[in-house]
Image (cartoon, rainbow, N blue to C red; front, side, top):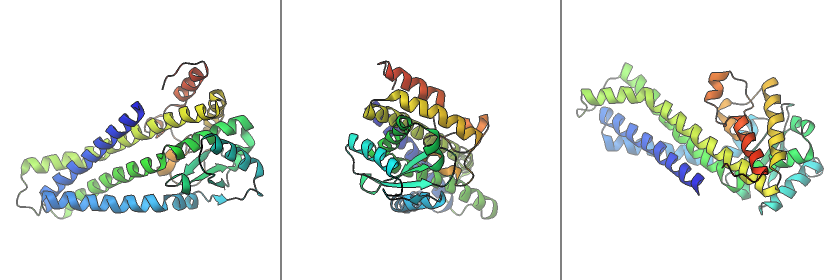
Length: 292
């Protein structure tokens, strides 16, 4: 319940940033009410596209190929075991053509879910470790995390779009509203700089919260927290040594570990919580200590 309350609070904060910034821009350009309505409609359109087409877009961007049970019988067997334990319908299964070991889930609900793994993960992990990874991904499906993250990413993207749009118009257009004043302009300029940063931080907080929850529920589903901890340890090392060579960093939150290379500054703004903390929590869970 605590995780749900935190996520809801973060969404309220993100929506508040969006509405406030829309009001400020509207006050400067064409009226507060019109500004709010315009950007809410824009966010709605973006959400609709991400909701209905996100799975196809993600699979295409990572060259993932849907496979049949005849093509990947061992993988299908483990996926079926995990989904039955989670009391979910069997998702589609896809394989990403890269030796970087990783996995992700996509789809707007359990009836339209896809679980994808890379070729590399099938070579690196034991069957128990793979089961732990798949339980994590199936938990994302069960918890509707794909929908949550799509909405969060869309709102954050809309705020960043507003900031860029306002900045260009300030440079080349000037204010068009008679109701605007100096204070409003200052607030708008400050918001142009700070709102995208705030939106990013809220999005990261939402994503990290969902990752912890998927670790917990995945480990509880199969009753093997140490298997998932061991898998995370292997995957983190392998992905740092050999980051994925295609795809977009904007979708890194879908993967069980960050598949892209980055230094300390980039990792600070990663959508994933620190791997050491994830592993420590899973090991504590194996000893009967709930740190979630």
